[in-house]
Length: 68
Image (cartoon, rainbow, N blue to C red; front, side):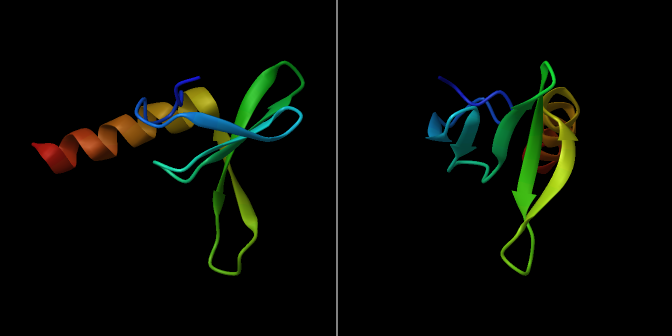
């Protein structure tokens, strides 16, 4: 399955209902009918960054600006 955030990487299942994309380094999980995204923090933990839809929009805006 293709990553819904970056659109490039392949999601890998790391446990039931938890996925990881090595391309954008986001971890995703299902939570009450919506998929939420986490990103590694400086201390090695995971920081909740929002729903996959929100994170995808922000990711696309940042990477579109860099390539322009």
